[in-house]
Amino acid sequence: MVLTGAEIVIRCLQEEKVEYVFGYPGGAVLHIYDALFQQDMVRHVLVRHEQAAVHAADGFARSTDKVGVALVTSGPGATNAVTGIATAYCDSIPLVVISGQVPVAAIGQDAFQEVDTVGITRPCVKHNFLVRDASEIAATIKKAFHLARTGRPGPVLVDIPKDITAQKTEFEYPKEISMRSYNPVVKGHQGQIKKAVQVLLEAKRPMIYAGGGVVLSDSAEQLTRLTRLLGYPITTTLMGLGGYPASDRQYLGMPGMHGTYEANMSMHYSDALLAVGARFDDRVIGDPANFAEEPRKIIHIDIDPSSISKRVRVDLPIVGNVKDVLDEMIRQLESGEARPNPEALAAWWKQIEEWRSRNCMVYKNSDDIIKPQFVVQKLWEVTGGDAIVSSDVGQHQMWAAQYYRFDKPRRWLNSGGLGTMGVGMPYAMGAQLAHPGKPVACVTGEASIQMNIQELSTCKQFRLPIKICNLNNRYLGMVRQWQELFHGGRYSESYMDSLPDFAKLAESYGHVGIRIDKPADVEGALREAFTTHKDELVFLDFIVDQTENVYPMVQGGKGLTQMILSAEDL
Image (cartoon, rainbow, N blue to C red; front, side, top):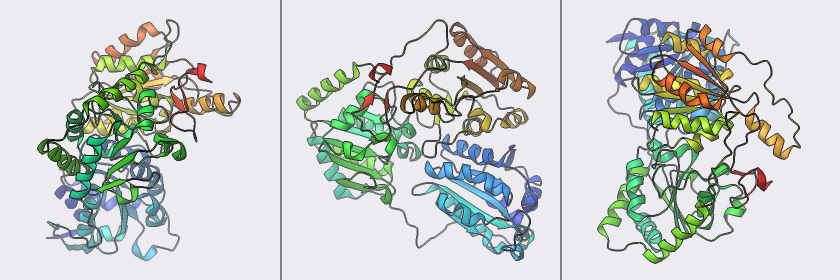
């Protein structure tokens, strides 16, 4: 079968069973768009900015176990996509990004809309390719999907010159792909797993610390089974929320900078720590020197060997896919006779309950002004905890993570590693397309939402009934909080002046806009959004307390035991 390069690109996507491509057309990819037009298996979602295309593909991938796909043109199309690519890279999200390029003969000639896309994206992709002949396209795209979804997932970019998309060649999609230099380990070392089980059973103060790898490997079921089998306390990172049911008594909440007192203290004073698909990043453990003060045995399960002992020295490394390793740990536990020490475990839980009794998540509610935490709690109640929730980055992100209790994986979509403002609405778009019948909410702030607010147009075109919960405090909230606490209250450029009327702005795009400024109206507005306007996008503009800060808090550079639990601790 002889096809053009553009037709081959689309056939490859069909072979990979791609449902949606998020993109924006331009000169270098017009042949590909023409091929898209002539088929109906792969749907294209026209965004209004290339950054949003990659974020939406990312949100689609985060909410499913599939690879997200984005399509952008050369030059500014590719550079606009870089923020989205870097966001996915930092959180290990499987994406394939196809970018157009100037004709082969024009590469390096400063041609119109030419940039070195491969060079620019090299630091923030798992791998990238520049295709120089149409005969390479099929194998390259097959490799791109294989790389994106296997091992530690990540974004892969395929850069295709315009003349190559017009070139004709025979097409045959490879059934299998072999890459000699790429063979990620899946099964963990049996001996290491056996030692790990022994360390866990002998521990007097055990702790399980799970991260985004649990969600990405679809191993929440195994993690839950192991945790309940052992009876040990567990904490999940910002990226791991939903990997273990938040409503379960063994769950201590999120650890780290804005984690709970009980999670942080249990992490710090444990004598055996099982790290599952987590990377000990700075926002979780704070100062490594402080974290190392208490002697403990650390077991670290991760698909990526470079993540092990990167920031914290590990005693028992286990390289492998989280699901496979947990399955083997469960098998060894159930087939053996040894069990945890009940007396020691009871004493440990008694200590944990004392820490938990501090009730660090309490805040002072008000009858006069809306507290942002209250909005998130009511969102959880109204949705029954069953919504897919995306967030942008800032105070609202932390409040959503703290007060919306996630019991299932792939319900929480946020930029954890790069901390990208503007991801919230595109994430919600991708998730809503992936799950058309589910409630999808975007918790955002008045600063973040404006980063990609043009996507209200995309939502209208594709009838995406997401609910936007804007916690509007008229500030760059997290910036203001740090300026208040650590910069003498000098609010340099953190006040958001000249804000639009968000409700009217949403209405101008053809959506429903509601402004809420009284606590008594919060629940009613949310219920109206999810029932009366179930099939419409609703922009809920909550005017919240400008002075509210996110607590608990560990100041940057401090240790987990140096927590600020409330304003009274300052």
